[in-house]
Length: 95
Image 1: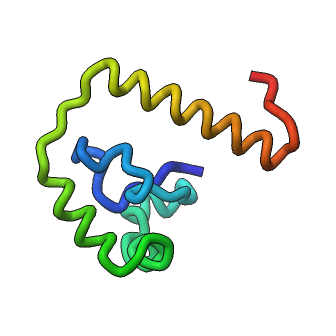
Image 2: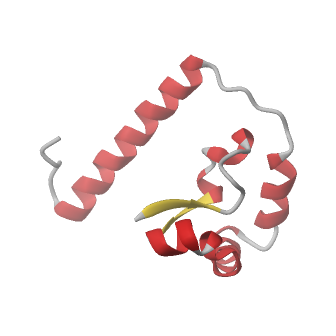
């Protein structure tokens, strides 16, 4: 599974927004241009009708991440992965 993005990862302001990402199969994400139509429909169902406009507006804002911000994101997402492992498997993985 890949991490698909509605707004391209090249736009740093939306790159790490959870509202901009969803799991996708590799084929759709890498070779099917992210199946944008289906992706958009699913985002609207999950976050509301205005999410596409919100993401498109936000992508053009300039964002430069500092090391501390990226380190904080790493801590947050490692904790979320651990939480998902516990929820799904009932235990933490070996790593």
